[in-house]
Length: 250
Image 1 (cartoon, one colour):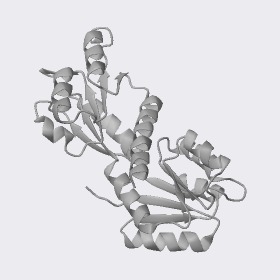
Image 2 (cartoon, one colour):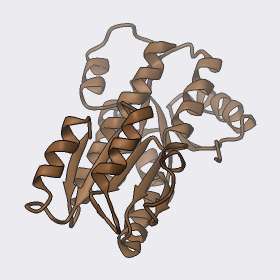
Image 3 (cartoon, one colour):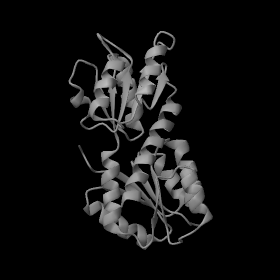
Image 4 (cartoon, one colour):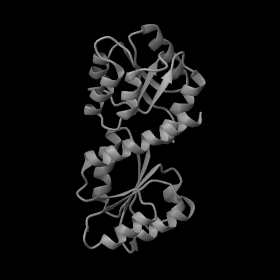
């Protein structure tokens, strides 16, 4: 999998953005710089980013407000804030509102690079559905939001091929010749905590299977036609949880 990310660095200290851009570029990432929140909003209108690394205290627009505004354009976009202040109300607000993490200045560069490596590995969604049109439509939507998508339209494949690179699985409950619940049961034998979102267009018919899936730790069940904002919000929450787990462990 390609480990390179498109990263936007936002800081009114031009020396900071230049230094970080040089370091991240040497590590293979594609980097763009912005000197303010307004500048960042202009850039996101024309460029798709995998992550935004922003200072928390800037003139005109702080990092928390920038996080709110960025999500109007790209829901689910991971935003990481940098701060030189150990305790601050903005830090609390940012964490409550879903920023992926807070990095203290001066930055630990090795730690920062490790974070971006973790992020690159946590952008893969596997769609298991025998409806090729549905898969292609959802692929286009998620790809536009910066996710990497793998589509499996043949549910007879070995379960290990489904879970190898997946960070999240979208699994239809009524596949051609096989039950999505049976596939989930197989997944759970070796992957008890891998997030699996069940999907169905047959709410009443599949009610008992939905309940059974939730009992074996399906993360949620979504109904066709999908409410895309709801899906993106779930994916954002799952990703933020994983990235914060990386920060806590390191």
